[in-house]
Image 1 (cartoon, helix red, strand yellow):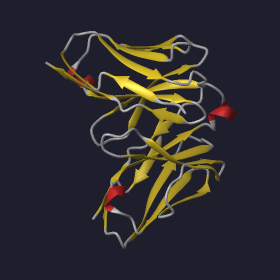
Image 2: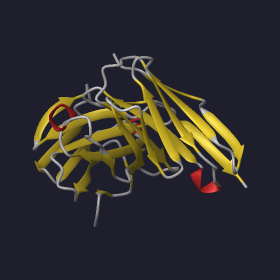
Image 3: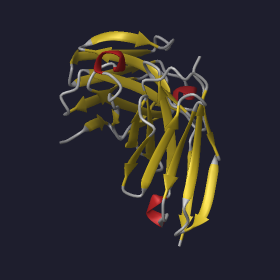
Image 4: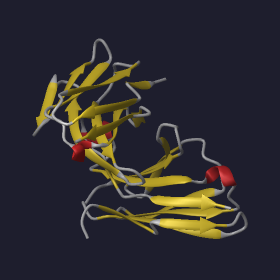
Amino acid sequence: ETGVTQTPRHLVMGMTNKKSLKCEQHLGHNAMYWYKQSAKKPLELMFVYSLEERVENNSVPSRFSPECPNSSHLFLHLHTLQPEDSALYLCASSQDLVRLAGTMNEQFFGPGTRLTVL
Amino acid sequence: KQEVTQIPAALSVPEGENLVLNCSFTDSAIYNLQWFRQDPGKGLTSLLLIQSSQREQTSGRLNASLDKSSGRSTLYIAASQPGDSATYLCAANTDKLIFGTGTRLQVFP
């Protein structure tokens, strides 16, 4: 596997379910990100991790819980979601945070998980 | 607060045309600006990154320019092909990527 991978690619869940999204990067990067893409809205940054430490939580509801056990893996744990949480969830990675890595810092994205909440 | 705008929102052209996609941002204090391509229901593919000190970057038929002082970037696609059909997103990096809503491009044979 190369680049950034995400599993599952599609997920349908009820509002009372608990599920997890997984992201893995094979690029040796230090920073990882979760984004949400809803229809007709710009991508929204949800969480940022640098060396397994959360550095940003962009006012995301507590029903979304991120976990970064090491610099290659990032999870998004989901519980008691709402139908409006249905979206494409994208993971990305970069060498580091741009303020540390400099202006060449480029983000690379995974294929996303299409989440539908019934 | 950084805001990114892309125009046009949608574009439909015959193949072979040279295209210009526009991106504007409100805060010129950016580290860099990235252009991405997104196919329907898929993730983002990075096309070009322009550092804040650069004026342009080129990759194949793609050329991106950056004018920080006016808060503008342009993606130029030469000799468009049906395979270029996708949504093109720009993102300004002010410690985090702020995305525009994209330009949906359709190139027909």
